[in-house]
Length: 397
Image: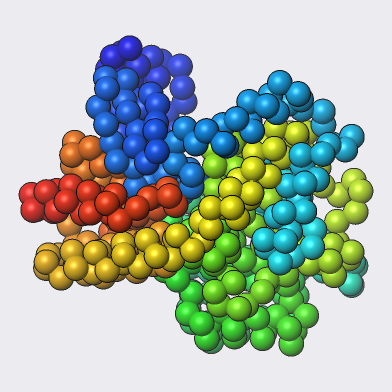
C-alpha cells in the first residue's frame, strides 16, 4: 500500500501523539530496513536502541516461532520454564539476585520506585519518603515515571505528580549532597543519560553517589533501559564503572523487539521490600517474552556481542570525531560504545529528516544532539556507509 494512503488511515484511527516521519516501514534484513515502496534504509536508530540483533535473525526468530507453537500466556498464577530460565540468565548478566519482568521500561521504573518506597517503609513505617532524581533525565511517560523525569516540559501538563521528588544536576555531586536528608529513600539516575543528550556519568560522580547511598542507607537505582544490554561495551553500563546498583532497570534490547522490561535487585533489597500482593502484572514474564529474553541472552553470550561492541564502538567514535573536525557547526561528540551523540549547531530534526532521504535512519536526543544507537551487530563497513550518507546531509548545511 502507498505511504500516503497509510498516513491518511493512521490519521483517521490512531491518536495523534507521535510526529512520525513520512515513511511506512515494511520489513528488515540485517541492519537494513525497507519501506512499503521498496526503498532501503541503513538503520542507525534500531527502533530507539531496541533491535540489538538487527532484523530477521533466524536463530532468534525460530525461538519465538517454537514458543508460539507451545504456549504464549498463562498469567503469573503458574510457573513457566522459559521465564525462569530467562530470569536466571538475566540475574547472572546483571550480577544481581532477583528480577521482576514487566511489559516496558516505564513499568520497570514504576516497579523500582515501588520497591524503594516499600523498602524504606519496612524500615520505619513512614510513608513520606523522598527520591532524588536528575535534571534532564528521562524515565518514561506514566505518572510515576514522569515524577522522576527531570524535564519540566514532560511533567507540567500532568502535575501534581505522585511522590516527593527532588532534582539534582547530573555529574554534580554537591548538588546531590544538598538534597539528601533523613527522608531520602533512593537516588535514581541513568548511568548514561539518553534522551537528555547522551551524557555519560563521570566516574567520580557515580562513585560519590554510591558512597552517599552506603553511608546514609539509601538505595541506588540505575536506569539502564537504553544504555544497558551491551550497548556500551559491557553487558550493563555500570559494570564498566564498577559501581553496582541496589536496583537496576532494563528493557529495550532485553527483548530485541518483543515488549519486555525488568527491574533487578540485590537479595538484601528483595528480602526487605515487595511481598506477595504488593506488585503484579497480567502479561509480564509470560512464556513468550521469557523465551525471547532467554534466547537474546544466549545469543549475546555465544556471539560475544559485548566484545564486538567495544571494537565497532571505538571505530564509530573515531569516525564521528573525524566528522566533527570537518564541520564548524559540530560542537561535541559524547557517548560510549554504540550509544553516541553528535551535538550540532544546526537543527538536528532537519538533519534527521534529510538523512531519511539519503536512506539513513538516525534520531535525535535533547534539543541539539544527533543520536546514534544502531543494531549492535553493525560492522565497520556500515559505519563507513553511515558517515558517507551523513556527510551528504551535513554538506547541505
